[in-house]
Structures are given as structure tokens and as C-alpha cells.
Amino acid sequence: LTRLESIDYTTPQFYMYQNLPDKLIIAMGVAYEIHRVISVGIGFQLLAKLSGTADFSISLLDKRINKKNLKVDLFATIAPTAGILLRPVRGLRIGISYRGALQLSFSLPLNVVLDEIGALDFKIKGVGLYTPHQINFGVSYEFRYPKIRISAGVTWAMWSRAPSPSAAIDIKLDDTKLNPNAPTPASIIDVHSPNVKLNAKDILIPRVGIEYVVLEWLTLRGGYFYRPTPLPNQVYETNYIDNEAHTISLGAGFAWYDKFERTRGLVVVDLVGQLTILMPRSIGKVLPNDPVGGYTSKGVIFNLGIEFRHDF
Image (tube, rainbow, N blue to C red; front, side, top):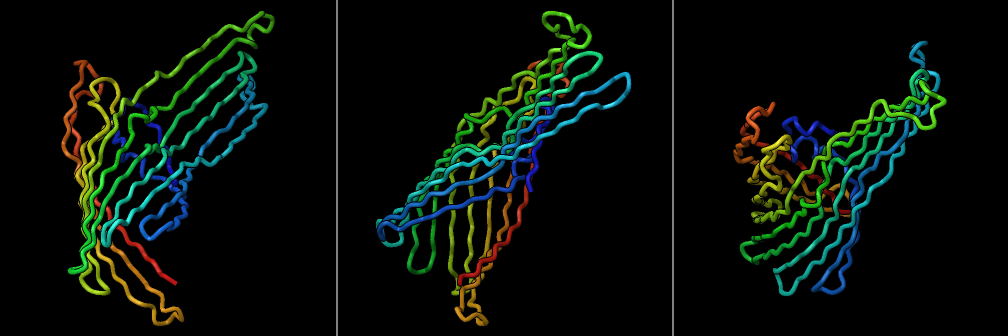
């Protein structure tokens, strides 16, 4: 349900689509109508945070593990959500909402005592599955006849605050077992992974949509949004690929009353199809001997979805 990857920053990878969608988020909220003109809502989204430690003692001469202790903790990471809906006149709705940043943080230190050499400390930590702070503004208007609703909105996605997607790795090995009488242990290995910055920027995502109630039991929908890329050209060592995206959605909703229930509740089935076109983007490297070299990225993504709802 949730998968985390931390691929080396020199390997070409689609930042938005590599494994960013591979996560299960629990969302809850509550709304209250203060007046027929205004409603407010608050809630939260929940993801996970992973941390732990591992302690080992290894004899290289005997080829044996003398001690092993492992501890892993899974904590909840909560991001707030909030919104306001205004209905100033019949058919007109104006809304604004906020969604906090959400990420999966991980920290996994490994402490190993090599009986014949010394202490080996291996630490890995990082952040994955990041989604930024977002402020959304939207407006819609519903006509009486024909029953058509048109909507438009814009999202401010604060990608400039995104952390590095590359895991930080530290490896240290000292000589506490080789020279037990030394006043201070000497370092045999002391390496650190480079600090890689994403250098993303904030973007504005415009959206438009239309809904048409054809019959009492049939509703047709369509929409479009444009997402500019927040990532700069990858002209140096990093290869986080992202493209400008044009997305078109079409959907249909079917509704009927359940005659077998006492409440005769409304049953709704919504079908949706979505097409995303990733516009071609060519990358040239500054260094002529770059191991990856220049490349062009593009693509097409299809999504299909179904939603079932029963009102009691």
C-alpha cells in the first residue's frame, strides 16, 4: 500500500511519478455550516514516520555474529487541512482551502562492533513521498436550466520547501579494538554522502471543469488542468526528471434509488478516465564527459477510476 524508494541522484528518474503516488494516506475531517452563506471545515492527513536502531557484534575471525539487537518504531505524521466555503448568491460558490505538507521521514542507524577492528557506525536517513503545502482557491456557478455547473480554480503548490529526495548516508569505522589502549580512537573510515539540493520552485496550477446533469440518473463531467514543472534543468550531476503536464479528465455519474432498502437510499456510481501528457523536455549537461549525458523526457499516463457511494 505504501512504497518508499531512494534512488541515487545520478540515476535518471521521474520525480513526480517514480513512486510518489505509491502511498496510503488516511484522511479525516469535519465540516460545519455556520450560516446558509458560509461553511467551514478542518481535518488532517496521516502518513508514517520510520525510525529504528540495529546493534550487532561480529567476529571476523570466527565468522560469527555474537550479538544482534534490532528496534524499529513506526510513528504517525500528521498534516492539517482546513477550508472555507462561501455561497453569496444562489448558484455561486467560492472556496479556499489549505493542505499541509506531508512526508515520510526515515532514520535507520546501524551500529556494528567488529571484534578485531573497532566500531562501525552506518547511518541512513532521509525523506520520501513528499507533497508540499498547498493553498487552493476555486469558484463555481450552477445554472438552473440547463443544469450545468462550471468551475475554475488555482492551486499554489509550495515546492520550494521540498527537502532533498536523496538519502543521507554516513559511514564511520574506528580502531578501538585494534588499539584498545589508545587515548582516543583513530578513524579508519569516515565518509559522508554529498548534500544534494532539489532547488525546486513554487508553482501555480490552474484548473477548469464542467458538470452537466443530462437526466435525473445521468451526470457527465469534464475537466482540465495544467501543471508546470517545479524542477530546474538537470544540467549537473542530478537527474530528477519532470515535465510540464497537461491533464484532461472525462467522467460519468449514474444514480438510482435502492428499492430494496427501507430508507430507499441513493446509490451513485462514478466512472472517470484521465489522460496526462508530459511535454517533451530536453536536458543538456554542462560537463561533456558526464556519465549520463543529455537526454529528452516525455510520456503519456492513463488513469481509470470508479467510485461507489450509498446514501442511507
